Length: 140
Image (tube, rainbow, N blue to C red):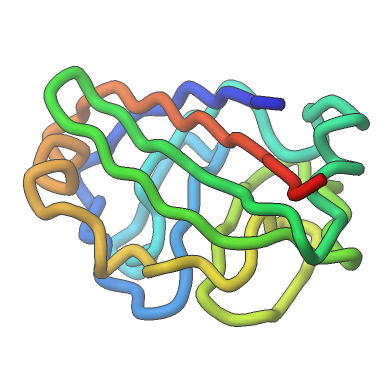
């Protein structure tokens, strides 16, 4: 099962955060938002299909996020959690930790914003269009 978010880069994308990455529906980004990879997202977790959400609410679920600009692709995987609610109507956040709030879409991520390919980050800082594809799989 998949969900897709379309967003845009911004001149303040720095991707320097050590424990999270984020895509937001906000139409602005300050330099303090060092985990944010894309703004003006067309969807938020609250918009996701309930079946997708339910599949992500299992500890044995593998959640993979693929970040694509016209010239670069980065994939980061993590896992699901029974506490994931996908209730945020503003932001989708991936975390390397086990912390969960209404914005969290994956926990135990392989890396955070600082781990993203710097060419992808540069493209986003230049305003590149971003497509984020979330895929969930479970061992049967």
